[in-house]
Image 1: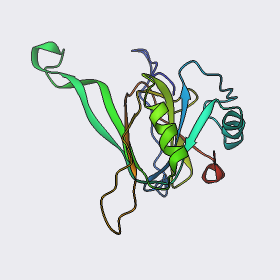
Image 2: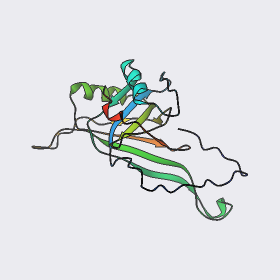
Image 3: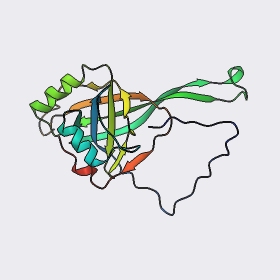
Image 4: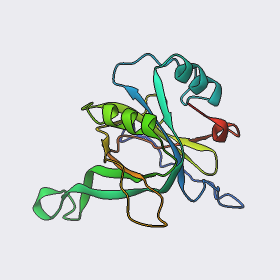
Length: 186
C-alpha cells in the first residue's frame, strides 16, 4: 500500500470515468497473513498469485479460504471540526476499517492455526474478493488478528470460526487483479 504523497503545488487528479464499473466481487473469499517482519519477496506494488504460492510453500504466508459473510466496513475516524480546522468544517484522519467474516470450511488443523495466529499482536494481512482482486498492496495491512473458537449454532447449521481484523488506512488502497487468485490454496 502506497503512502499518499502530495504537495500544495500539485494539480488535482483528473479521474477518468470508466464505461462500466469495475467488478471487484461482492464478497471476501480469502485472507492471507504473514508475521510482521517476515520475508515475502514481491517484485511490484502488489503480489501476484505466483508470488503468494512461493511464500505459502515457504511457510512465510498462511492462506485461509472457505470464508462466508465476509466484508470490509469502516469503523470510524479521528475527526476535527470547528475551531480546530482552518475552514471550520470537518476533517477526518486515521480512518479505521474492519475486515470480518466467518471461516465455514474448517477442521481441527484450521482451528489450531487460527488459535496460534490469534496470539500475535501484529501481522500483515491481505484479503481477496470473489472478483479475483487482492487488497493490501505490497506489504499488507498491519493488523492484530482476532479469531474466535468454533461456534456451533445448532442442528442444521454448519460450525464456523468468526474473525475480525482492524487496521488504519494509510495512503492509497488500490486493488490488484489476477485471474488466478481464486486458485490459491494452503
